[in-house]
Image (cartoon, rainbow, N blue to C red; front, side):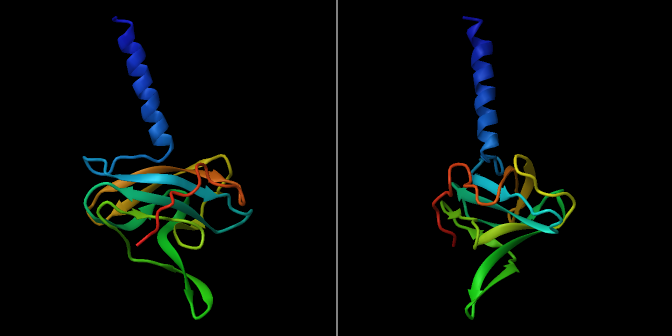
Length: 163
C-alpha cells in the first residue's frame, strides 16, 4: 500500500504537467480563466514582428484582458484585425472583455498578441512564455508553442466566438 502513494503522486505530477503544456493555467486563486490551444507561427527570417493566438475560457466572474508581456520582443501589444471601408486593418486594442462564463477566441484575422521588435526569430518547435494581464490585476502565464506557417494548431481552435 505504501508503494502506491509515490506512484499516485507521480501520476498527479504528470497530469499537472500535461495541463500546463496545453495552456491550462490558474488565474487568481480559483483558476477560473484558462488558455485554450495557444499557438504562434514561426517568423520569417529577419522579421521584426510576430504574433500569438491564445484563446481564453472564463469559468468565473467577468474580467478584461488589458495587456501582455513576453521577453521575445521589445514590445508586446494586444491587437485585432478589423475590416474598415473594405480594407483589413490591424490595430492595438485597449482591452478585450472576457464575460462571466464566456470566452475570447484569438485567431488569424482576429484578436492576437503582437510581438514587435523581435529579439530572436520565432522558431517552429520552440515555445514562447507569454504573460497575459487582466484588469483585475491577475496574470496568466502561458507556454505558447511555435508552429510552421500553414500548419494546423494542435487541437484546432476552441470554437468559441469573441465578444
